[in-house]
Length: 126
Image (cartoon, rainbow, N blue to C red; front, side, top):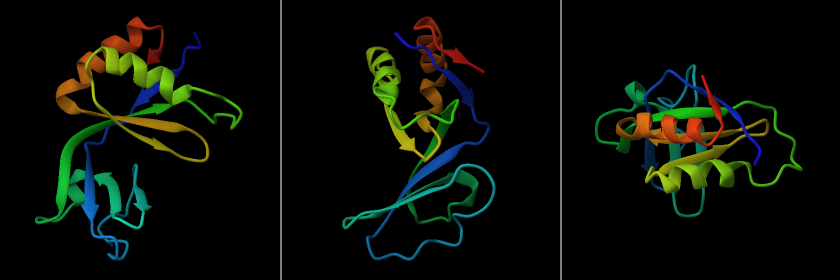
C-alpha cells in the first residue's frame, strides 16, 4: 500500500449549499481553503466558517487534511485509499480535489479518530 503525507490545515470550515442560480458569494473569499462548485442542482461553497453569514444553509466544524502534492494525474486510488481507512473507522468525509492535490474534510468531533486511523494505516499526518 502507498502511504501519503497529509497536513492538517488550521481553519474550521463550513460546507454550504446555495441555490443553483446563486451568484458566487462575496463572503466566500479570503485566505485559506475556498472551494466553489456549481452544478445544475446547487452551488456548494467550502470556506472558513467565520465567513458564512447567518441564514445560509451550512454544516460547520469541518477540518481539512491536505495530501502532499502535487499529485501526478496518472496516480490511481489516492482518495480511495485514504477514504477506505476512514470508512473502516466510521469517519464520514467530504472530499475535494484541485489541480495539484486532494483534500479530505472530516468533522471536528471525528478528527482524533481520523488522525489515529490514518497514522495506524501508515500515513504521515502533520
